[in-house]
Every structure is written in structure tokens, then in C-alpha cells.
Image (cartoon, rainbow, N blue to C red; front, side, top):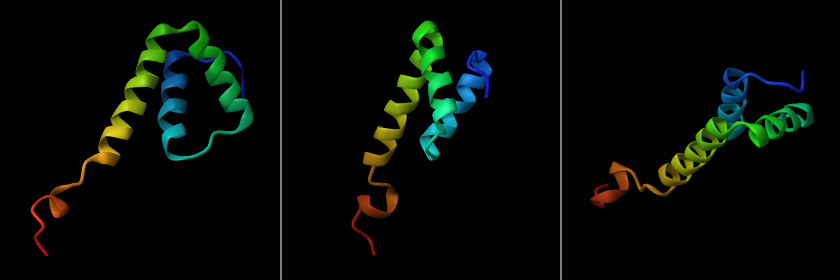
Length: 67
């Protein structure tokens, strides 16, 4: 894994990191990229926000109390 990522590569790792633990080289490369790229940092924060919001949404099967 190279340490210098493109924004496209960083976006892929941001997305993958939501579903699985990234390897140490992947995490390192992503952290370096996020340290210098404001756009990818904003995307990372938005993805994390959406993941938290979605996990708190009860869903239609639990809203009405129907069984």
C-alpha cells in the first residue's frame, strides 16, 4: 500500500473503514491523506454522521409497535 493516496482511493478506504477494520498501512495512508485534504476530511465526517444517524433510526418495523 502506498502512503500517498488520491482522493478517490481515500474515499474508498473511508467507505471500507465503516464496514471493516482497515490494515495498519491503510489506516496510516488514510490518516496522512486526511491531514492534508479538507474535502476528504469533510466526507469522512459526513459518512460517520450518517452511520450514527442510521444506527439510531428505529426503522419502520419498530415505529408503530406492530407485530
